[in-house]
Image (cartoon, rainbow, N blue to C red):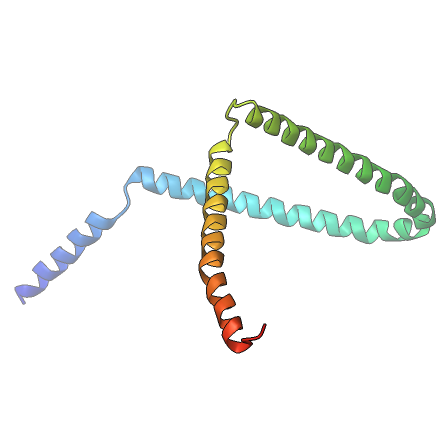
Length: 149
C-alpha cells in the first residue's frame, strides 16, 4: 500500500510535466477558433454559390443564344492576342539574352550553356574516336567476309 501513493504521485508529476502551459493553450484555442470560423465561411460561400447557381440556371439557359456567340467571338481573339503578346515577350527576352551572351556580358544561365557546350563537344569527340577505332575494325571484317570486294 505504501507503493500506491508514490506511483500515483509519479503519474501526476509526469502529467504536469507534459501538460501545456497557458501560452500554448491560448495559441491552441486561437487556432481552433480561427479554423472554425474559416470552415463556417467556406460552407457559407459554397452554399451561397450553389443557391445562386440553382436560381440563375434558367436565366443562363434562356439567354445562352445571346452570350454564347459573344463569348466565342470575344474570348477566342482575346486569348489569341494575349498569347501573341506572351510569345513576343518571350522572344524578346530570348533575343536579349542571346545578344548579351554573344557580346560576352555573361547573362544568367550562361555557365550552364558553356557546360552543356563542353559536354556536347566531349561526347562528339568520343564518338568520333570510337568511330575511327571501330570503323577500321568493321572494314577489315567486311574484307574478310567478302575478299573480292
